[in-house]
Length: 142
Image 1: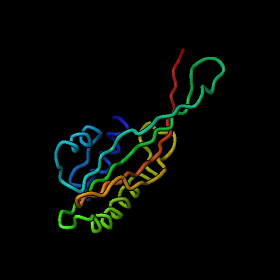
Image 2: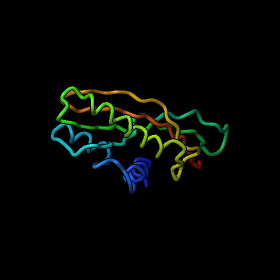
Image 3: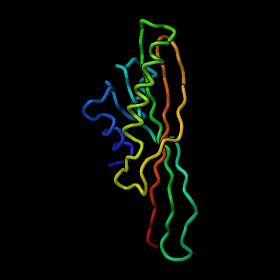
């Protein structure tokens, strides 16, 4: 199971506040049509590998993966987005509680929170991104 799939499953667990939890394709489709909200979309935002740690033999590298969780919440009764902006704080807290300290199957360490950012507020909708980091090890035999 991929890292993104593991996180989607974790956020779509029993008791989730989200009506939709998906990946990058779901977020791209949202540009074309509306979706049920609140929604969370999970994707790899960036990957950075360290230099090979071994002088000879197999390759061993640390891979740091940043995961973006884009949260979308809509309240059409409030076109300025004030109510949705307040409600998104609860969604951020839920996502953080599910992912901070979570250790995916192939992770070298538990996940950590990196940052959060308000992406846009328009037409009663609020978009926010929460970013998490996960370290894994890449190893290949020569």
